[in-house]
Image 1 (cartoon, rainbow, N blue to C red):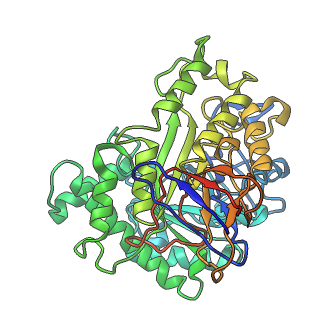
Image 2: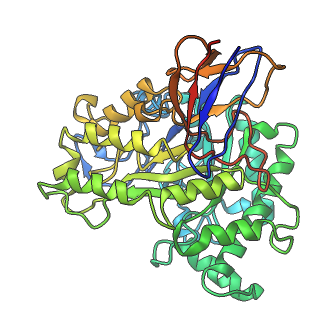
Length: 469
């Protein structure tokens, strides 16, 4: 007879699968995308031009002639499998005083016919960059935009973005950031909260207004993409501190702030480490590893945010990520140890995030993938690390997460023989001696029911499978 023994830790959830076929255990994918700075940003030199310039003819003279973008730029960007997020190109942080955003009217947006493309860069060029490389487009919509702006922008994206690509739509940028200029999304939101008289204490009014306006924008985009809903990914802008995330998920279920019961797909937070460190410290890489470990636990840690997103059926994404060390940044950015550091960083982060968007592609030292748009790859250690990590982890599984972050296909065959989980993360008929497996499940493959219909992450269990008479 077949004998099966399950050894389960206290409080664990046991998932017993009996199947005549071998269900697929696909690893939870983590994609990596990239942010962009304005093309005129950074020191100008004869050798490098503006550090962040990606236009072939320079940002001061964009004529539409081919190629519009530097060939090395589009070649570099091909390593990423996540969306392109040209938030800084769109100047959304200065939504209240940028002349192209102040009115919030579509007619006043930056035209593609302008020869100078800086802050902002016309949407058409942002979309064209995504089309050339074949990557999804993450658009940050200025907080000042009116409802017609939402509809017109969605219409442009749907028609111009290649049909095989998705649009990630986010209202504003860092709406929670009360640091003052240039983060005008927060300033705008607090003014509207007062105008509308949204009640609550602490961060509750902000959470409610962000949900209200985001869901209004989502509804406008949904209407445009009604016949292609798979091409729209709705991003809720967030932050793990001060219970803002909890208040936002609550507001999303309140018809006062989400009257259309709109569902969103991902909750976005920043995932920087190293804030306040000195890049010239001989212990900088040890310090960064310690900061990475401290980012995981606690009520504002990655684990808590992962659990919160799982319980609400949405993805956890990092709208920006990387190293936030601005003091003596050149000291560590040019250090070959950056390769090992970022390999470790993405290995660890892949256990929590579904998508991370690195900040940013190029621009002097701090944080960036390359220092300038045509820096030789041999000198760009962060770029090398991301490239090689994505090659080695095509579905985003770090070595330590195999098969600990497996997920189960919801389609199960009729009753049959007991299956076992192999080290490669697949199920095969159980035979031979007893074996010990560790399984920590995340959301099941293909399950993304939206807010309120989550498949929770399973606690860690130990499964001993043996057969014999």
